Length: 75
Image (cartoon, rainbow, N blue to C red; front, side, top):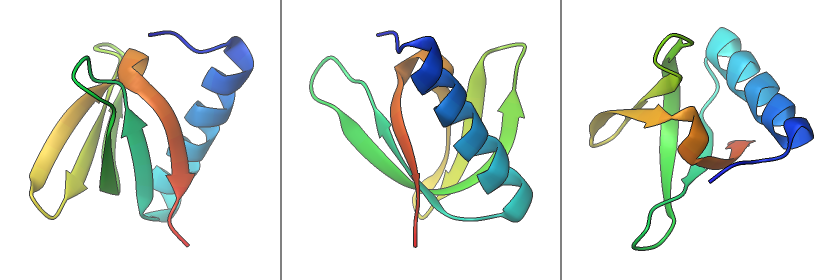
């Protein structure tokens, strides 16, 4: 699943800002069986493996950049 360059840049900016400010985010993730959402804190962004590590109430997940549909700051 791929996003346009503009959407990718917006998602990257929100993730970077959320990591630096330690703000909670909600990430909508593509899944073949149905899209899912994770709300938590970004603890690491790894450019080499093109994934983001999100810490949430059920543990942590590494989410591939290509699976991320949207990222929103939790207000």
